[in-house]
Amino acid sequence: MKADTNEQLLLRGLAHNDSKAIDTLYKENFGMVQAFILNNNGTYDDARDIFQEAMITLYEKARSESFVLTCQIKTYVYSVCRRLWLKRLQQMGRYVTASDSLEETVPVEDDVEIQEKKNQEFLIMDRALGSLGEPCKSLLEAFYLQKKGMLEIADSFGYTNADNAKNQKYKCLMRLKKLFFAQYNIGE
Amino acid sequence: MDDILLLEAVERYLAGDMQPEEKAWFEQLRENTPEVDQLVVEHKLFLHQMNNYAGTKALKNALHDSHNRLLERGEINDGKPVSTGGKVIQLFHRYKRVTAIAASIAGLVAITISGMVAYFAPNASRQQLQMLGTEMAKLKKNQQYQNDKLRAVESKIPAEATLTGGGSGFLIDPKGYIITNAHVIGNSNFAAVVNHKGEEYKARIVSIDADKDLAILKIDDADFTSLTTLPYTLQKKSTDLGETVFTLGYPRNEIVYNQGYLSAKTGLSRNGVDADSNTCQIAIDVNRGNSGGPVFNSNGELVGIISTKQLEATGVVFAVKTKTLYQMVERLKDSDTSVAHLKLPYGKSSIRNAQRTQQIQKLEPYVFMVKAYTR
Image (tube, rainbow over all chains, first blue to last red; front, top):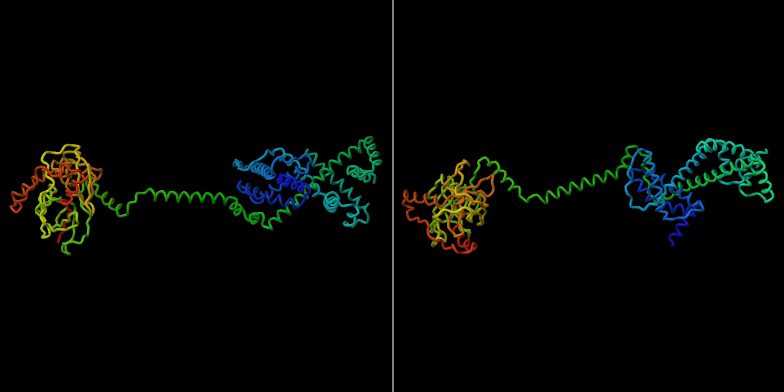
């Protein structure tokens, strides 16, 4: 039971982006995933990418309130990584009959698919922000990502008052929304 | 400016920062103005996306930091040089496991095979294999004399004498007459015989019949004391096919017993085609050095004298028949008076009812190793 409590704590830590929890999860699971990737024609870089993607999937799950852990974190992470990697190998046109692993796996196809959609959305936002240019990008990031107040933003960006900053923020936001929804709707 | 205020209001409304009255007023506005309602929905979606983006972005950074931190502490292993290395190096790293495994398997197989070869191969020494080689070279000659290997043994023989051949022999007269093969003696001037105890006696060559492949020696040594009667006799009637026979001889420096049976009443002449009535065929395992050895039947009667064996077949041995020996001795007696007192043993052998081991014990002292010398 203690192990389960531990895992719940780790997941809560992950959901709140706690670096200690992330370190622990990383340490406990990365080696296994790396071994799997390297054994299946992957590189160290592939291992890192796949593992981090799996961690993000786990993070999304942990953030949703409905999430209940039905298996060990290790099993879940391994299953996701395995699924992701086999998919990537197929995309590269290298059909690989995955060696029957000794590790236990759980069905994660749905989670992986949902995560793929979220990745798309992330990329759209990333591209939209990227094509916004400065100082709009930093301004919006300060407000929406770092959740800074308008006064503080006005101060650090050198606006004479918060209203001017607000005005600038509004213009930037309009442009970002336009860029974002242009892509987002196509995506849909 | 209105738009800015409106958006701010939407954000405050979505964040739940509005006072109850303001919220009620705003919800009223939403209901009455579809544009505002649309804006709220759209912005809600956008903010949700933005939040997701923020969270994922923060996590990505955290993961990146974590990776580097653990890497620095050495708690995870990352083949960093790989990513900066060239394609060849990447390929090497990618396939080095496979290569290593393949190499290991290859090595293991090689070791296993060589081990198995070493284990199962006959333990024949190089020398023996060479001997076989020389025998193969002589295969053309269908038959071959079973000459003994030349052995250097300290002896009474003068130092300047050279050993030219060797084989086996046995007494046919207790006074010291020994029968052996003519090919054992060859062109030698004199011979020496050694009994089973290792005692050596000089012997002179009395007669050689190369055609019948028989030679008679006479022990001519002061150390030799005449033996009493021979335990065996010469067989008078012819041997039946399938009759068990055995032989004693010196293929080594020690007396060796072997057993077989009569396969054919005649042997083959040296051309390998014609039947030779002077000899008979025996299935027995003999080696070089058995030449001149006696062949007895189970009654302890002399059936023949081992002479040759066929090389391309196993267990095909030819022995000179007793009758041939008898004819030779009789002819010799007629022409040479010095051997007139040679008396071949006939009658009943004294070991005819004995066990084989006892027969051998009795026979041993009468079988000699023969060594031929030239001066």
